[in-house]
Image (cartoon, rainbow, N blue to C red):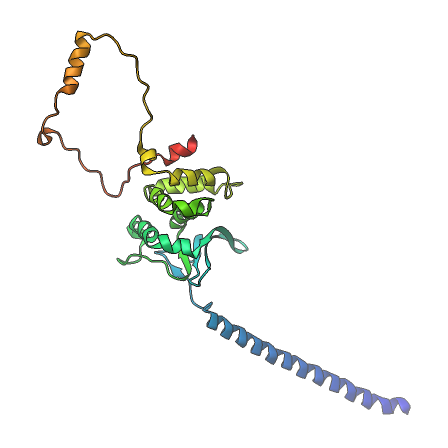
Length: 266
């Protein structure tokens, strides 16, 4: 009889515990929804909900680069490589420079990148631009920008900003891609190897880069009829400019190959 009296009480207690657990789960779910809403509102307030800006045409699910420009004072700009893998995108930070340095060179660097892009890399007729926030770049454009940022990271770069930019702009796109492959190889890092050599090559003055090596002076020889004739030919003034054949101008798209690669190989 005692067992018969305890059974209903035990059953009611189990029902009460089950109901309490159900209400607790509901309360936790409600609290989680509230926290999610707060997080979403915080992201909106911080501007994190804005979509990345594409610099030209960038594949939606392919490899790319992300250039993060922070407009606040004392902030830095970072270039990140995004490689698609089976486990999702893998991001690797490649370079970081101060926002002050980027603002000094940004207009000319962006113009250089845009004018070298092909028609199939552009979206419409409007020139691409970089904006404050996250900018997505194609692999080809990202490699060119990485080359410039690597040189700007080196010691002594703040004093050579104009020279570095000038040397980088004189490189053809194919040369930038080739140098990127060398400077991005395994073991390369700031201050050593190809990246340090890249800084020295780009920061050289235009005169030292273009000047030919000094020729050795040969000893003077006794004058002869042949030598005197050659001296007279050298002394003969050249024909008028109109009589000289005009060299055909090369296409504007091709740039004069510089001695940057040769400097690095030394």
